[in-house]
Length: 359
View 1 (cartoon, rainbow, N blue to C red):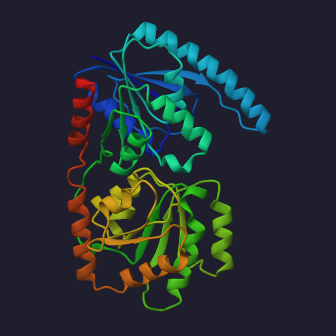
View 2 (view 1 turned 120 degrees about the vertical axis):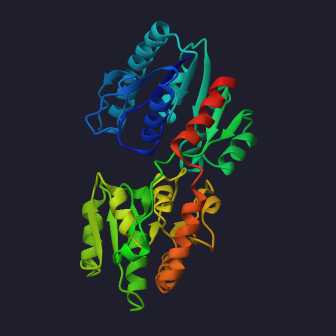
View 3 (view 1 turned 45 degrees about the vertical axis):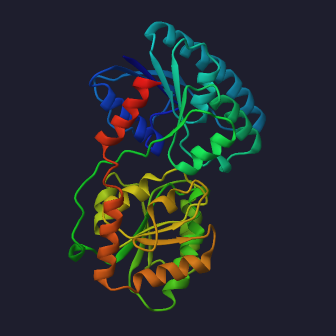
């Protein structure tokens, strides 16, 4: 079978990670190609030699709004022409699109094959225009893969009749014994507005003032808010307690040594960072974003769920969690790891393969 993935870039985001893992797995018994819409100089996840990569090589320029709109229209037409040519040449049996740009592009071309769409984020985080466009597009798919049941239910209400829930695949590893933990808790993610790190920094500062725990907060990731966040940390005089570590290639090493994981996002799809922290055997504190991913994996047995943007409740959750005995934290971590044990690469990839075969 010939399978064509369509994705805007092959960077190091969550959707790119899942697409790379699936392409590698499916290439063992199928002919697989990835069509990359935009030119990107960023690092990428490992791709096997068996997987062909066809890059449209189109630069996406940033600037004033009117220029962005004009550039988008020009780029879209060029990308569509290149995709049409590639479909005619490759003749796929199935197309799998990742992320809205790829979904819109795929909808614009004649395919003569099955099409599987994939919702990777929170639909409610988009504008009403974007939601309406994607609702119409997803009705044209032969199957829409969602990451959580709540998102699948949302699209069923929008008359997208064929939906299926498949979680993100994880590279499962052994958890580090609690006796080897170091004195910090951790958050991992891009330093941008979505992750709401100002709320987390203020909440941790508030909790720290109770003098009920000694743990520090490490934040792993890079992004446009780095200077702003460092200034906030400095203004709160928390330079010795909250560390911005930047982007790390070995995030698992930091997860393994942490005592707990915190997710402060305003919106998410199914956050890989949270799942990886659970596999590392960490208790979780997460905000209650729309997709329901936190509630599907976290409860009082392995962590806390707090309202989005609520500094006081986040501070209270941090204080309560770090006030527990080490044996309690260790048991919460055991529960976390148990809940992601069926998300291994082979198990999740097999779920995708079943859908591809029957769609």
